[in-house]
Structure formats: structure tokens, C-alpha cells
Image 1 (spheres, rainbow, N blue to C red):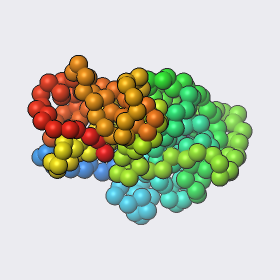
Image 2 (image 1 turned 30 degrees about the vertical axis):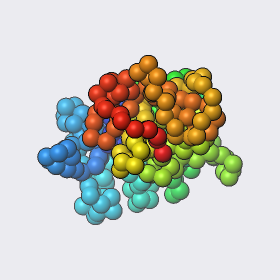
Image 3 (image 1 turned 180 degrees about the vertical axis):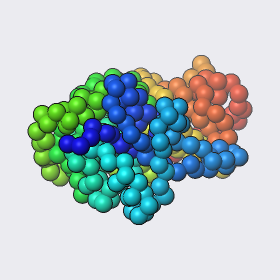
Length: 316
């Protein structure tokens, strides 16, 4: 092997932890590839990715190709001559990129593959009420998230954990796992294991306005898991309706299953002693954190103190 150089590819905060861990371990990260700066915020000013910001702080060269098959970008990759590409929360790579390094391209995925292949593994593990999930390092191949497995490490999902809680735990666990993986690849001690291909294995499809809308006709436990699995982002949503007034977009961001009177029509709202309850298909939820259209996230009790309700409220 001519070098022990690593090219790092990633974009969000989740990837920064791995970049930091590689550097802290003394590994040779020769450059970073990340998304181009994009307009963001009310002023729509260009904003750098979290990975770019950190890479510049570390004094690392940064590449931001618009097109991953751009000949100029491919020439830059050849000139860097990295023996491993490390990928964390980046775009889908074309074969002309992932096949370049001598020791291959390794990816960090936020689940215990083959479970939860796809774009939103952390969210779906919580939504489905899993008690455990984890991180996996694997070799990138043609089909997304199907490459041979290298290392895995599991973490618990607590009954009140949100996707945000699990994200932060996996971010740290995954960073350490990637350092271990890179050393094993350099040492030649890894024996990749092919993934099981089974249609019954749960997947993690992209989150959309359709699959993030709250189905109040489901059991309270299931609705609560959906809220946990979509908090803090993108948020499980519904419409806040008061009598015949136009509905307001509403996100429920924290809740708990409670005993609250007799059964009622799913989506019915009960306000008792400054607390907000909503009926589900089987049971009730107390809404703890909420974000109503045009407002910031806040405790439901604060919302109730700050708005005037003159009719019957329902969520749908």
C-alpha cells in the first residue's frame, strides 16, 4: 500500500463527530468532500455545511463538487491518492468515485444493518418502537446500504427517547466505530460479511408529509412512538381545528400515554387544569411540547396560557 491517507466525505453535524475522531486518533485525513454552500435562513445567504466549517477550522482542504462525476473533481481525487474513503451522511456515490481507493470506500450507517436500510434509519427505529438500534460500518457497493458488513455496535432506545436523543448517542458511538474500522482496514484484519437480503427486514424510507402526518385513529402508544421518532425534526404534524375556522399546521414534539377518562373520537382535544390531551384510537396522549403555525416550539401549557380558545378544538 502506497499511503495511509483518508479522504472524508460528509455534510451534517452527525458526520462532524467522525471527522473529529479520525483527527484526534492521529489518522491522516488528506481532504474533505462536502456539499456546496446553500442559501439558508430568512436572508437566504449562503451557508456552509457543518463538515466544511469544521474542516476549515482543522486546516483541511475542502472539495465541494456540484456533480460527483465532474472530470475535474475526479482528477482531484486521483491527485489526493487516498487509500480509503470514509463516508458519513453524504450523497449517494457513483461507482466511478467509490471504486477509486485501494482499500475501498467505507460508510457509517445509523442502524444495525440489514435492518433499516434507507434515508431515515434513526427515525424509523424509534417510530417502530424498537428497544435497540445501533451503527454499522460497511463497504459501499452498487445498491444503497447493501454492502458487506464490517463492524456493528448497538445502543438502547429508552421509552422516552426521541430521534434526537438516539441521533446524538449514535453520532458518538459511530465515530469511535469508524476509527476502529479504519485501523482494521489498514491492518488487513477485517473479514467483511455479506448482508442478508430478506423482504421482511424493516426499511427506513424517506420522510414525507404523508408518512409524518399523525394518524390519531391508531393506538396511543403507536402515535406516541411516531411523535418521538420525528422529534425534533421534521416533527409529527396535524391540523389544529377550532370549530369551523381554517386549520392551522401543528407539530406535536413531545407527548406521553396517559389514563384520561373514557374513550372519545380520535383527534378530540380535552383541556383540563392547563393540560392538553388528545384522544387516539385506543387511549389518550398528553401533549407536552407543541409548535403551532407561526409560533416557536413551546410547552403545551404555555401555548394554552397564550391563546384564546372560544370553540371546540380537535386535531386531525
